[in-house]
Amino acid sequence: MNTLRKEALTLSPKDRLHLIEELWDSLATTPEAVPVTAAQRKELARRRRTHAANPDAARTWEEVRRKLERRK
Image 1 (spheres, helix red, strand yellow):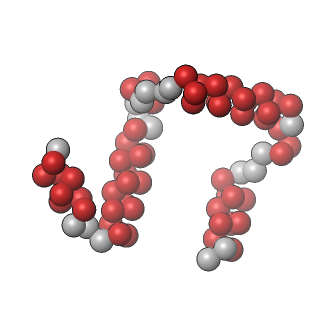
Image 2 (cartoon, helix red, strand yellow; image 1 turned 90 degrees about the vertical axis):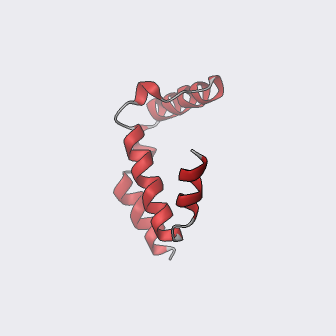
């Protein structure tokens, strides 16, 4: 793993970000294998309750992305 880490750190920032995205996406294929802490479970439950109480407050990914892109 040490060699892999060293190689990854030689990549450009853009390429490292791309690698991170690919690794993150690969985790989505087996979500049950990703450990979730008790604190994360508590936070997820809080967010579910908040959403259930006011579902209209939620924003789509497209809306969030547009807002972020306008900041550039």
